Image (cartoon, rainbow, N blue to C red; front, top):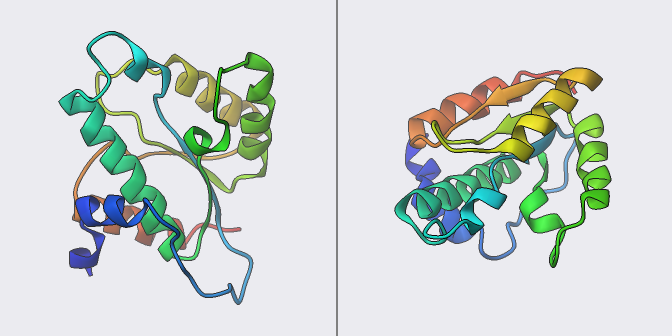
Length: 150
């Protein structure tokens, strides 16, 4: 099962549309959370850490979609200059989600993600840490997510 969950291949597939069958039951609603702003700091954009994180984030998104989940990805939701008033959309996604996946790599500053995790705690949305890993990590996370109540 883990061979089709190779993060590099999933991330590449995620650059286009990911086709899935229509759900036969209510899908698990997943919000992806992770650092965005830190990568804009000097020397961070396209660094090894940034490339590894982006590959993992894309792989998790595609794997979740393929697993039949409905996925909200804040980094793809808004395009352009950020305004804190736009955070309301992410907050609504947190409220609506069955689970928030925190993709923050160890040692990476993610103030916005910390605030989103705190908001999830406040509104009662479970948070599942899922820092970058491999196909086995992803398979185990998907198996656990599949058992969560909707």
